[in-house]
Image (cartoon, rainbow, N blue to C red; front, side, top):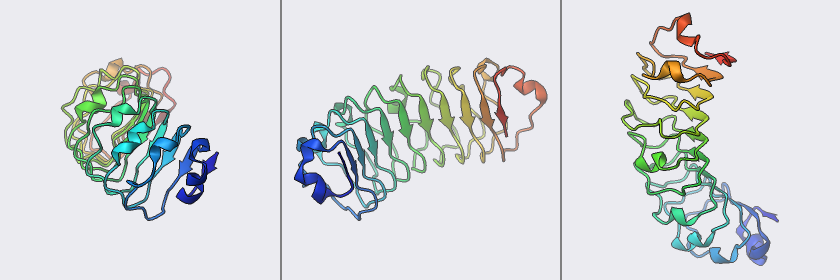
Length: 222
């Protein structure tokens, strides 16, 4: 069952699988009996006024997708790993400076438009990540080692003020890094043979044809 407001969801919480609470002016969800939502797999809390997540939400052990974008979070709770089934987490357009430990099984992570100055260690501890969106964070430089994300397919580093790309996972099929200040390519650029889409538009770097001969599957270049 899909619900789009708390009132109808609370009538039969044990039947709700998808709960969409976007744009409802929520300031707090602390009084919601989350432990009763035993079948909940997707929860969308985006575009509200939330500053924290109540601890009783850790009972949502079957939750697979959690959307927190466009709220007022400056931090996320340290009980997030209790959400053992979580595969997708979106926390874009908040005020995050760092991250706590994350659920180890995460596959999609969206942290665009926050206050991150480097890739948090918690991200690097998610070995199953497939898609990672970090655009519009004030990085300037990434010192973290991304090559350990051996299953990563999509990486977004757009609008981050970067002068250099870090070494990248060789599993990448898509790299989006436009609108930076890039002067050099990643140190392992020639090893990224699986790349199919590359967007490096609006960077000062000068590229030559030979910079792309290592990508037999390349279909899009900007």
